[in-house]
Image 1 (cartoon, helix red, strand yellow):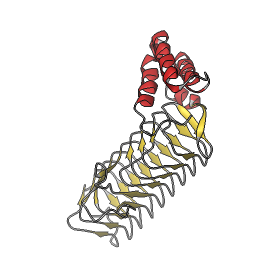
Image 2 (image 1 turned 180 degrees about the horizontal axis):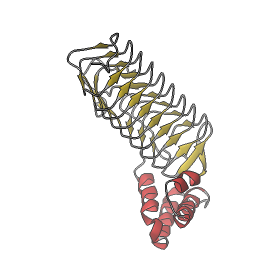
Image 3 (image 1 turned 45 degrees about the vertical axis):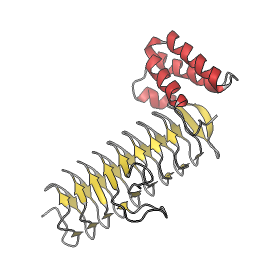
Image 4 (image 1 turned 135 degrees about the horizontal axis):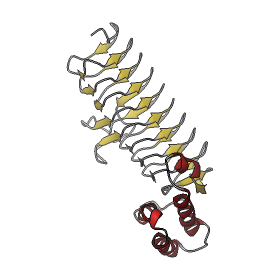
Length: 262
């Protein structure tokens, strides 16, 4: 209890590991579970059916697990789950899921969520994601691992952004962004691949060059999309060291219900 500030209001039904720290005037609801080593700053509200894993740091004035901003929501017991080692900065808002989707908003582990970010209902976030200040995700958005969204990026509902993709400052995303692709502008359009990010994550120069060739097949060849996918498949066969990444790119495009930026 020495780790809990005396002004914090914690429902007796909440489940907090004995090593959790809670700052002044924070409010934690009855359906909340928080794992070992997590630090909840002052003036934070954590409510709803919310599960937070280990070693997370949530800064002051964040709102975690509030009801979704969806007029159809009628108080159903939907969920929010947050993994381990995430940093959630000031004034971040993360909402519960809805029954119009899978009923759960998810965030994985090792994510860096900067100030004023909004993560709406039913969003599904992977691991090692960075959301810069004021990035806004509408409902049902999916972000795969290692995505980076620049400041003030806005993402339309139901969009998906593939692994290692990134957006520039103020990008407005209305269609899916394939893995490895950089997007910029309003509306967001392709602007090359995230070469620097791939270098930092240990991709070889040969793999990066193969991904660039795949990008050119989709975006610079002038081919219709179906023919571009065939060219991408041919590139897989010529680049065994990068085949898994080119396949990942091709399969993402084939599975995109909204269509990709192009």
